[in-house]
Image 1: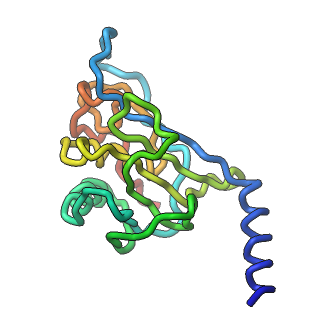
Image 2: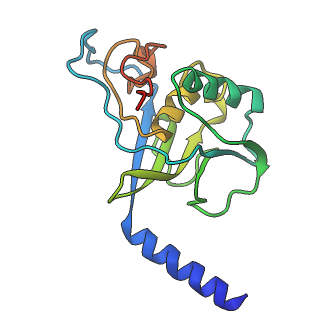
Length: 185
């Protein structure tokens, strides 16, 4: 058992050397600048999952399986797949492999965001291996916030097209999904 743990810790330390963590914040306050309705180019995806991730709702997070399912269904309609949703999980490890964790903000959370997502990718392949969505309790029921953060967990960057789900400012976002559909191989 000890030798197994040693090998596991060694492999994880090797893997961490290749993992890049990307952080996205979702701002809610009203900016003074205006955003154009027209944006040049398509949204950019900086990584992808090799197999469908499981979803962990961390204990103490005031969000229901129904709310998480609604957010995942937005992305399922675009061709994305997810594993099982687990609720009331004790989320200790920062990078549980092949999971999207959802929890309340921790001490690294950047205010005044409604929510924030960290993704971990293997730099050589851009494979996403873990993601962690931090969401304020008051933002759980806000329309589109969780859908937007799941978009980050799927590797999508902000896209400043008015009414787009990946718009960086909640006030200017919407349900537009231009460029996010899974393309058939």
